[in-house]
Structures are given as C-alpha cells and as structure tokens.
Length: 370
Image 1 (cartoon, one colour):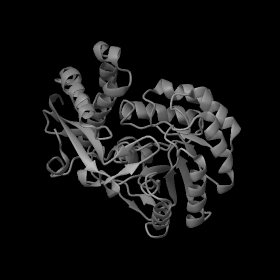
Image 2 (cartoon, rainbow, N blue to C red; image 1 turned 180 degrees about the vertical axis):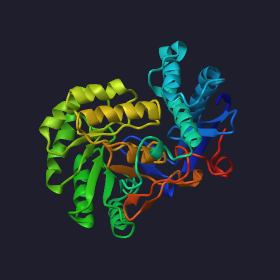
Image 3 (cartoon, rainbow, N blue to C red; image 1 turned 30 degrees about the vertical axis):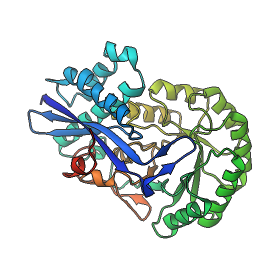
C-alpha cells in the first residue's frame, strides 16, 4: 500500500451555549484542523488536532501538513507508523522550528490518519488492533457542566443533571477565579448537589501561582476532590512537586505538554498523580502510547485530555491498561460517522474499522472553514 495524495481541512464546531470560558480561555467554537490521506488501495485515513478555532493559527497547522509533511509521505507505506513518525518528527527543517507547537499539532493529525489507515487495512477498530477488548468498560466523566463563565446556579444545576439524568459518575468544574474563595464556594455547592458518591474534579488551567494554589488545595480538602488539574503554570515542574507535597488532593496535568520528555520530567520529580496525555497535542497516537507506557511503568493512572473530544482517546483508553476513565465533551459529535457515545456513565466501544475519526458526509459542508 502506498500514499498517493493528501488534502487538508479545518472544522469549527460551536461549543455549548455558544460561549464557554475557563480561567484563561474563552471560546465560541472548537477547531479541528486535519488531513485526509489517500492510498493506492482505496483506503482513506482521517486525522486532526484540536484548537480554539483561531483561523490564522489553524491555517498554520494545515500549511505545515501541506508544505512540510506531505512531500515526505507521498509514495510511503502508511502502515509503517513508527518509521514515518520518526521521519516527520526528526525532519531537520521542522525540528529546528518545532519540537512542540504548530509542527507537533500537524504531526499529530498526520499520525492519527496513518493509524486510521492501519486499522482500516486490518478491518478492525483501533482498540482491537492495539489488543483491547470490548469487555473493558471506560467510565465517563463530564466537563461540559462546569465552565467558569456560568453562574453558580447554572453550574450546580448542570452538574446535578449530568449525574441524576444523564448517568455520569464524575464531573469536573473549572476554577481559577481572581478570588479563589469564590471557587471554594462553587466546589462546596457542587459537592452538595451531586452527593458523596460521585467523583468531583477541579481544573485551574494553570491560572494560579503556587501560594494561591496551595491555599485553595488545602481549603477543598474536606470536599473529597478527586484531582486538582493544572493548578499552576504548565511547565513549572518544581512548583508542581512542591504543591504535591503540600496538599492532600492529587495533581493531574498533561494537556499542555508536547513531548514524551516533558512527561518524564514531571514523573521523575513526583510532581503529578494522574497523567493526562493528549494524542492531538503530543505527536499523535504513536507518542501517546509511549507516554501511557511511561505512566504505567511508574504505576500511575492515565486519564487522557480530550482535545479530540474523545473520538481518538476512547479506543486508546480501551486498549491501554493504565486507563479506566475518560473525559467527555460533546462539541464534535456531529462531525463523525460514529460519534463517541456514553450510556449509563460508560463509553460504548466503536465498531467501525479505523481510529474512530471518519468524517461524516456533511461535516465539511456544515463546519468547514477556509
């Protein structure tokens, strides 16, 4: 099998209530710049990354795919995923300006498309190609009820609905307000609404400094918070290690880390407890698997961040032994032929061959931008 052509796309899908915000970001749409890879055997692979739907930035990603990576892929065997990952990741011109950021997001989209082809060529879903079983149940927690721009009553009502009506066994709410005491009240109100048996996570998106995060972490110790995600600046390894020693709530992070080496630095420093790699920010499925294996070697759980809105991470979580739970946000559901689905609090394994990323026939017409 040989690659005979590539084409790129950009999708912008609306978020819930058309506007969400955390402590750092405010969005009206979620972006999915991606690539379609064609082969001489008629098998087509799809891949994409996740962005804040900033069109100039999204264009840089697809330009990197078209201008830098496509010429390296034409004529290659798409099933040789590791070799092609090495070829692209260490291509001197993009390695010089990259090793993260735009070039790595572009690499992620390409790598996902290659794995999509590999699974389709084998006639099985990605989770089965990687040795997983449909008998493994992945618990879903929902983040889409806890945005920081929504008032306390809305957050409490949404979290209660997610648990009592939709059946989720975990919810995550955003924190990181200018006055951290406001967030303490939100945590207390949500815990009261969902009861003691539901997992509750909090996420500051790297907004606070170490002293504030430590004060907040100690203040929420009585509310059984499952993890405190991205409490301080993303790259501060020493700060996270100090915070992990100072508070009882476990630390989670990973969505802002681009490389296997970044995760190794945090693990070596004992600076986190829940490892959150994102395949569409790392260099795709290939590097995600390396990070998940590293976490497993350190006997730490993996709970992926879903810049892909869980389409890719759901089959990965089924396949990898370090995974038992996954985040759910529904923004890209209408873009795929087999959208990720949760029933009774657990993900349903996809059945279509591939990496669960085949675009719906009307996705480009409905959500495509140029």
